[in-house]
Length: 407
Ligand SMILES: Cc1ncc(COP(=O)(O)O)c(CN[C@@](C)(CC(=O)O)C(=O)O)c1O
Image (cartoon, rainbow, N blue to C red; front, side):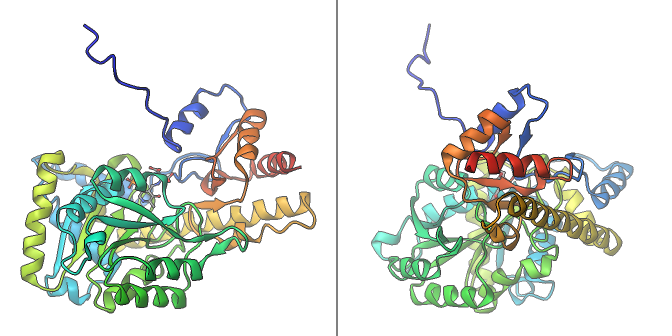
């Protein structure tokens, strides 16, 4: 009996769906510039040295595989917070942070969304109760995550297509117009998809407006250490808000900076005003998680806890993290050089001034389609290029293809 006959065909995911088309492409010249996953200079995925070493220790310890608590592995969660806020963060030492391990960054954003939907800010105007502002553009999955949790999602100006940089005036104007107590999503570093981050002076002005409008902030940190190569530097924006006393929420992904994509390692932290608030918020986070997926996976959390808890392994990780960031920076300048030599008079400065995994190239959708159809180059239709997929072996081919579709 066709009991599912009324189910409509769902749209392919703009990122992951495109990757399936790439896999199906038989051309030997195909290159995927789609998913933000690191590749080495030979186009191969990498398991970091510190991760391998930690795994050897974990396997040798022959640990049991009991359920983790609903809130996850406490040692991992604490290490995750300390990586972002610093070991001597007062919020951490005073016990004012409610934090849980999550199914990577996506899971952290979704648990945050459910908490926000259940507990609007007490200072919120009625219009702000379930309202979250996300940057225009943002990671495509953000819209669905917050919508599915029952929040109303609204864009705020972020990308300036003319200057190929931050639309600071538009951003501040939109935030000033936000109803009091609404939630604001901010990318901690390496904004996806634009690669454009506010300067420290611009972050300070954003923090001013957040205070004026009593906005609640959810930082989404998916690239700490991977952006600049220095986790301390990549934590600057989050630390600015915490030092100003903002009760921020922080979603952390360890997919990219630890290369643990498929292990699904993440955390969600809520900085509160007191131990009592942290305790009630944690109890509510557990009520969100238990019916959603009960408890998070063991292995990846053990790896991150082992690495961050051992100075020698942490140093190894820092070197590899810096190495990934450096290779991406090299490819940014290599591709820029190739493009500017093929297109005299046209500047590709934004390719090397942007930071993190992606270059927001400015390529139009029809040019992206031509790259895919004629040159077997795959990238998302917003023109985002995953720079980790560029390497000395394909950089000229990529530059030539881009030049030809722009002609
Ligand atoms: C800003 C941002 N937040 C959260 C996540 C979620 O990552 P996680 O759940 O794997 O921890 C991503 C990953 N974005 C990728 C790299 C992959 C993806 O789309 O899932 C991207 O290609 O944009 C991201 O870019």
